[in-house]
Amino acid sequence: MGTFRLLYWIFFGLLMRIGFCADPFANFELDYSYITASPLGVPQQVIAVNGKFPGPVINVTTNYNVVVNVKNKLDENLLVTWSGIQMRRASWQDGVLGTNCPIPPKWNWTYQFQVKDQIGSFFYFPSLNMQRASGGFGSLVIMNRNIISIPFNTPDGDIVIMIGDWYTQNHTALRKALDSGKDLGMPDGVLINGKGPYRYNTSLVPDGIEHETINVDPGKTYRIRVHNVGVSTSLNFRIQNHNLLLAETEGYYTSQQNYTSLDIHVGQSYSFLVTMDQNASSDYYIVASARFVNETLWQRVTGVAVLHYSNSKGKAAGPLPDPPNDVYDKSYSLNQAMSIRQNISASGARPNPQGSFHYGSINVTDVYILKSLPPVMVNGKLRATYNGISFVNPDTPIRLADVYKVKGDYKLDFPNKPLNRPAIMDRSIINATYKGFIEIILQNNDTIVQTFHADGYSFFVVGMGYGDWTENNRGSYNKWDAISRSTVQVFAGGWTAVFVSLDNVGVWNLRTDNLDRWYLGQETYMRIINPEDSSNKTELPVPDNALFCGALSHMQKPQKASSATTLHVRRLQLYLLLAIIPTLFSILR
Image 1 (cartoon, helix red, strand yellow):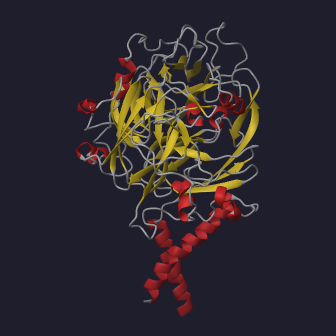
Image 2: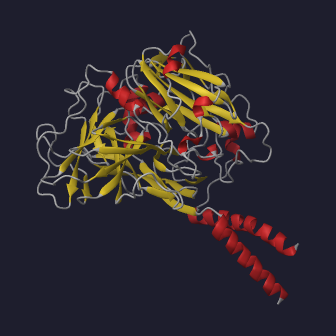
Image 3: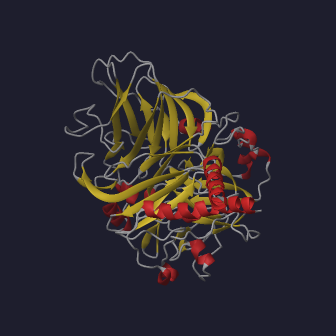
């Protein structure tokens, strides 16, 4: 009886520990493969996820442990990155070349990360070699825990809309064009959820193109999550005769205000509350049209879907709702961007208000000015730069090189301001300070709108303007309720300033999200190390399933057939063992 009683109490204690103390696991399988599709009426090879284009929505809840087994059925290397997911303590899971060795063809690799203290609208996509231009993307939604209230009534439904410019050439052809020194030119269209435009105009839209239809019920309010997953085009998003009540962007609740349309730049995500309050005399247009271009020449680069009420009396017809009329007013879009403020009284992933971190009163410890210019020829190749450096990815991922003492893999000498010298190709990264509070000024002297993205972090967007940034511009910074996000636009000939609190140890990619400029080298990394951590409290150890490449290729073993389920069971066994040990000690004391 003594042994039975001991086992009973061990089992009971284990159940209590698992049931009430542990954060749940969520398991997903993502199979990457090619399929043939004709989103703009031309058959082409696209990248599907689980046979779908776009890929499936990943739905999880704050603090879940997410296990994603990625199978690479492409004919080239693959990595999947998770835009806006901060990967707390785990840059090993970030899915870019500076942190991960690529997944070879016919291999699989399992990502495991916790969506710690995050909520909101994000997306995943393949990060290598322009692959996102062929698809492979999908939405990632993090819901609040039930105990945390949301700052609006629970919507009647949740709708995902993925918009983006699109070429009928696949990513390999686009890559070859860039490699030969050419510009990508005007896209062939804009897709909405992987489909071409509704035939609103018979001369602009050919017959036979499948369009997206969003079905809704009258009187209901929906949360509509919109992601720009395109190559390089800023898009204006609007729904005919409906207000867009902005509620959240990239994990942070916004001050709620209505827009008739909103500019959404490459890599950005928003969620709107949209009430179906029209009379449904016909269906309504959903439009995503190109911005900051000659709209007469770019008319066909317009995505059009249909909003269909269940009591609709007819098809959508007539002209599209007008885009912003600001050809001669450069300030319109900039002022709209700065009107997006953080809801400082709302709770985010935690019960404390989002505004409880008083970023405006913290002393800045370091300042970095990242300047971008139009691509230039470097060593006979077309390259894009930050501060005159076009980044070359190291052969061995940066933290793996650190752990296994690989010398000469990268340089900790990225300049904190532009240097007066010809552009070069190099492996320079930023040697950032753990727990520092830095200011980054993004100076865009390129001819196109760019978006800047930081992995591992969100940042406060404190200022924007046109011209060259000067220290006097700090007087215009918003130091009270600036929106916090991970992807921000930098207007052509302008600047954007952000504040970042460096509390996440690891190596984190800083890049433009414009795929052509990113491919041409406009990126770097921040290396953030806690020198006082010898027990993996602020950074997790190298994963047991890490892939090895570069100088560490000899450590890579041939991959055996395995599944995410098997891998997860092994992890769960380890987790259960760790969970049971304190219970055993407490019983046997």
